[in-house]
Image (cartoon, rainbow, N blue to C red):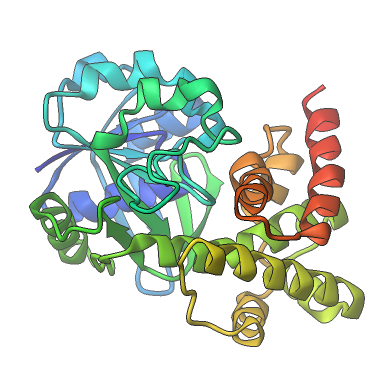
Length: 323
């Protein structure tokens, strides 16, 4: 199996290292000091499950890699529309693209069935610019439950979780999903193939849609947000509104809000990816988290006043931080 990790940051390098350890032909595509460190020392994974180093091929030139069986996208979703020149050399007729992203993916309504089948979510795929680069037919959905951070160039700190759920947009149990799952499992990760991954998307989104923007606005960790009474209440309301949108689209999360909050509190003083991006001066990945769900609320007729309020404030933060 030949795999390219396009955007081998904290999550991408962690998955690439695990697949390499399992014997896959892995190519990590990155840049800057992080790339230089991976070239020289490999990917160093520091984990409570055991440290290890993977010396996979690392480059900044996808043409050097050539066509692969799977492209794992470790890029932020707001970079997808511009990634055409990077991903094109990696594709052959049957290359699958696995987007390890948070939030609502560009392929969400591809082969969805029902009244919204084929609907384009403008917040994440404006005028179809993402679909033009990443054909929905190539997409395998992926929901990441692992938490990682780049501790330094070439050094990934694995904090918790090893689950990467995957699934087809059309809900079939495909051979390409099964093969990828087997490789991930051989590398020491959990990779269940879900018949309807959209349920997992909403389960993960339940936390991201609330904790990520609030963490950026308050500069707070997971534990701090959970322990502050007022913030915890706002997060509960945001989660409740999100569940109503999910249910209107036929999805079942299957986890109570209280259980979701308890799980977040156990993570401790972890900074969300949005807070990390804010601190590093990077663009904030909020369209796929908040704007998309507000848009989905509009098409389903669900009232989401708190989501709208937090979206308005965090959107201004994103615009100011990008200025």
